[in-house]
Image 1: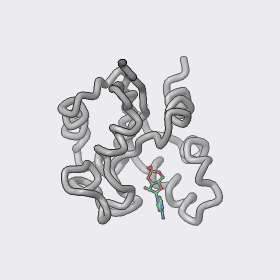
Image 2: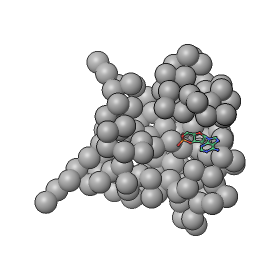
Image 3: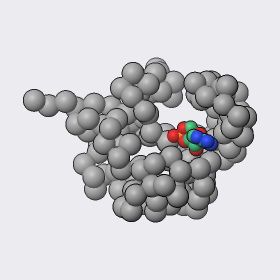
Image 4: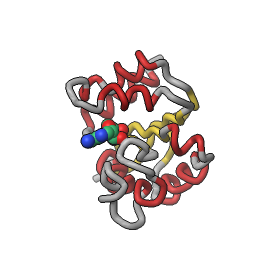
Length: 136
Ligand code: CMP
C-alpha cells in the first residue's frame, strides 16, 4: 500500500552561501523525492524564533535563530513514501561528525550549527512546518 508523505526540507545558509543548493536538490531527486513546492527566502530573526520554538529552552536557541536568519535559505516540500523518515536517513545525524558516509550532512555539513539541511522530525511536525512556510 502506498504511504506517500510530505516533509519539510530547508537548505540552510551555509549551503546556499556555498552555492550547493542545486547539488543538494539533485540528491533529493536522485533518491526518489519529488520537490512539490520550493522557495528561496531570507527569514527575519523573529520568524526563525517562531520556526524553532520547540528549541526555545535550549542553550543554543539564540545562536540557532541568528544563524538561520543570517542569509538566504531554500525551503522545500518533499514527497516520497515515508518521506519524513527517508529524509532523515538521507540527511544523516544532526552533527556532521557523527553522520554516516553518503549522507548530506556528512558530505556538506561544517558543524552541528552549520549542518547544511533541516528536515522535519515527525509527520506531525512536518504538517506544522509546511504550514509555517507554505500556508496560502
Ligand atoms: P536542525 O535539524 O535544523 O534542528 C535544530 C538545530 O539546532 C539542529 O539542526 C542543529 O543545527 C542545531 N543545534 C545546535 N546545537 C545543537 C545541539 N547541541 N543539539 C542539537 N541541535 C543543535
